[in-house]
Length: 300
Image 1 (tube, rainbow, N blue to C red):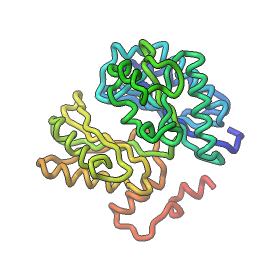
Image 2 (image 1 turned 60 degrees about the horizontal axis):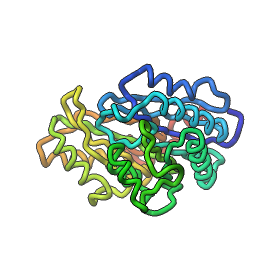
Image 3 (image 1 turned 120 degrees about the vertical axis):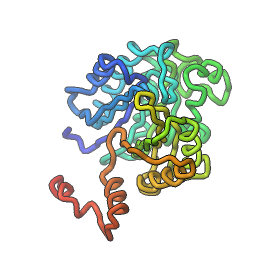
């Protein structure tokens, strides 16, 4: 990628079980000039695919639109089940400014994609986060409430008319949420219990809406294959709500139910500073920074 302008995109697709479909979507980001596929992961319980890709604005836009075309063609939400909330085959598409790109440029990019999605696929689009057209549309959870099954009725409400496209869901692909935001950390903590109600209660205590951490969104998820539950979190500003702080608050709340943490996972990619901050906390390092990381100097 020769351009100085670099944008990250982390689209979420409602398919995590059919690997043939997963590969078809991932192929939209492969072997594209000006675009680099960094990571993609699937979760059978969530029935969801998360892609991390970076690129120059225009090539990235074209690759994202190609991926949307594939997803709309092969994913039918009428036959979709999973632990993760969803309202669209392409559930959410965030654009994140990385290098020499302003937030305003990322917002404009999100709107350009939204316009093309409507023109090509007649797919309703909601704008969220920094791209939101109104304060009540900033939060993804608020837009997605009711999910695919409740979308038809929700769209009839004046306050939930889509920003782009028809006021009725695509029959198979639902609707898509697109916007610009800062980098977030998708962090999940696994608990040694199969009681989903415990994970739900802990999630409510940890997330901001429940009086918890300011830049934390959380929900309880059942991992049926493993017979345990999970507190699934999005840390929307890791510089103010650190990974270790979210982890420890889950531990504190879990102790109330005699439950312990058995593992954790990061979905997709994570900024190095977020890991450095957490490593420094657990190791008790004083004044430690990324400047002391060997690889930091190798990339200069």
